[in-house]
Length: 311
Image 1 (cartoon, rainbow, N blue to C red):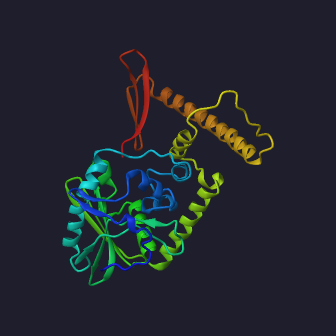
Image 2 (image 1 turned 60 degrees about the horizontal axis):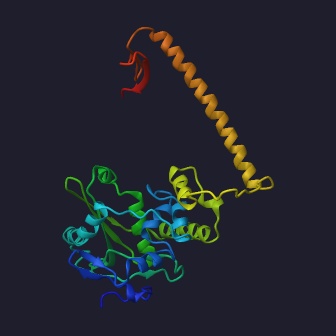
Image 3 (image 1 turned 135 degrees about the horizontal axis):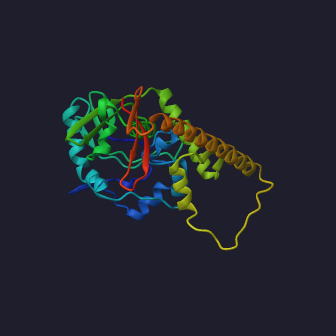
């Protein structure tokens, strides 16, 4: 047996090959429940602050409350179906590293058991044991993160998480994107980078366990959406007195201060707009530096003011 890692603590989760890829012996419901007991590779980008779709509050309501916006659709189905194909491509691109391919069980970190990993595939070759992460991004939006030789940061964080959990020293990530086009990278992090990830994941997991909203909340729309999912409706006649709550007082002060700046900024913008309108007069268009200014008459007889940069 190629892989003799004592960190594989869940032997019942060994992946089984199927016609369309790999699946677990566990039911979908049991798998989701297991995921809520810790942080996985797809959560690592949240800890590093680089995940484009998840906020700390998203993880909180998923892990602690069992609520989440589970993504389903064609992209997910294609990703699952094409995983063996992408893994095979990794063998072709890195024959020295990926001479042998091995299915891996779910793993947990020996010192931080809440750090879990389900790796797409293990590999073995001239560089010793490593991992393969297979991605598909067949939409125009999904392909943008791979242009100019880049790796989407949350995907790199995912590989770092797997390496931190497994104790292995390298991983390859191979992606099939729109085009179609192939992208591939070898990731060999230094110990300091992995330690930084572990520390940030530890802080995030502790905040989730301790209901530490001071750490979990941020200014993003994703956080606002997560709160809406956590509290989808009110309870009639239910009230709370926050007058002695210091955190609430700071928040309300921040709210009104920001609202004041917002009002001042809006007034400054309107004054600048009026100055420009007076200078344009009855012209349809004006140019100023890299800006094009239009003040067109619409079909309803009103004039519409617009400023856009041309460079």
